[in-house]
Image (tube, rainbow, N blue to C red; front, side, top):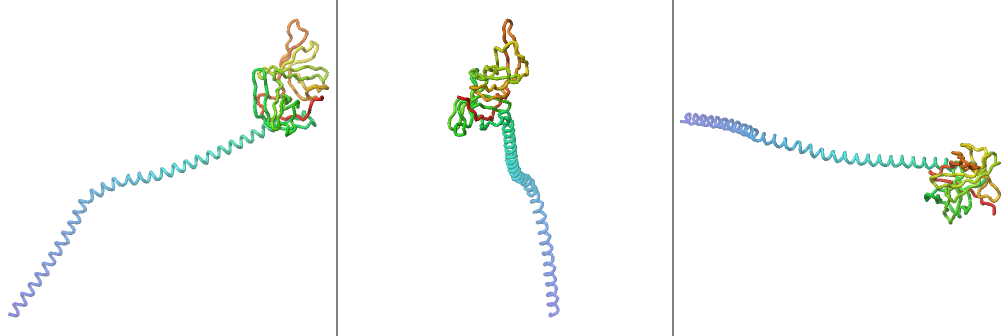
Length: 272
């Protein structure tokens, strides 16, 4: 009996062990199968999610990078604008210095004192030619004083305030300047013909030796409006009217009256 019980116990244990092994095997296989099935089911969804998410990620990254590029471009444009502004300022300063150096080069005034000024207004008409300047009585500028620029005489002061003055140019139709040539032995009166017509002289005696290119300077006669030796104009044409006993002259101003930025007022007053 004891032997039969032992055999049954051994057989039961063996069956239990075998059952456990089978269950474990089946469980492992089923779990692996379930995992494999889950992978098969989930994989298409994972691919779809990756397919959609990847370009969105690139788009977001591109948006961020684009913003950086825009910011960098704005910064570069700002820096370029500042560089251009500085270059323009340097050019303007250089140009201003050049104008000052050129227009204020007036060695022909000799030892006469001068006051430099800037042109502030220009008021030309067909007949009148006047300009305003930045210096006045406070700087010693008085009515009647000659005004010169690079090349020669440009006019005289006709009005002055404490801080400014008005200049009548020699091309004004009411302007006249006593001039001389041929070493000061011949005197003429040069008259303004309007801003667009320059200067002229009439009633020049036929016996006068004058030709195109002849230079005319202020005569400096006693009681005259200007000191002697200031360049005024050069002869462009000499015209003889048939039957007349005199020449007519067309003249070119010695100074460039069309591009005045700076000038000098000569601190000289006509004799009373």
